[in-house]
Amino acid sequence: GAVVSQHPSWVICKSGTSVKIECRSLDFQATTMFWYRQFPKQSLMLMATSNEGSKATYEQGVEKDKFLINHASLTLSTLTVTSAHPEDSSFYICSARSSGGAGVKTQYFGPGTRLLVL
Amino acid sequence: AQSVTQPDIHITVSEGASLELRCNYSYGATPYLFWYVQSPGQGLQLLLKYFSGDTLVQGIKGFEAEFKRSQSSFNLRKPSVHWSDAAEYFCAVAPDTGRRALTFGSGTRLQVQP
Image (cartoon, rainbow over all chains, first blue to last red; front, side, top):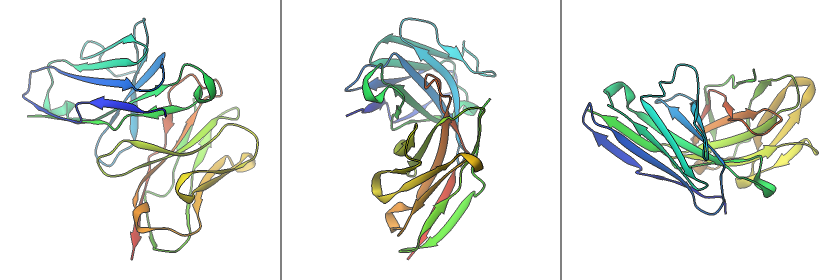
């Protein structure tokens, strides 16, 4: 149980285009999902907290108009990188926190999405 | 704010040898502590977690970790390393509310020599 999927796993796009990344909790409901970013050989840095039915909370330095987050249901959050540029190339990982039960305090991570902007 | 320090960036051990990866945290209260493993190009897999109770926790793949409040540490150990354990290991901490995102350490890359 507690599986989180991400789609796509790989995306290559041209500079100036927008890219949407989906994060799904497959076998549990997640009122809260988190989006992280990881540069090569570095740790994960939190970008934003996504709450179902409300606006996302962004970390300092993360442009909310560039990284649009939507958490429309208890099992799906999306991250849209708008007008992507080469510096946005990174590994994006989402995590989901179970809404209740024994897993309420544990976050489960998706496999990540590697974005390359040319 | 909480923080996590993993002092060892890179560790190399021989297959079959024991392993200890260090993790120190800074937080005012007892945090929730986690160890994750990440293979190249992959997401994170939870190895083990500590919330309360027994300070020695057992995880998957033969890993264990010990919470030492006096040292603010949560070191990961494995008695005998396998070649498949080569990966990046991240220690992480969450506030005791459990409702916020994790703060990750910088990671330790484990290399296993045959």
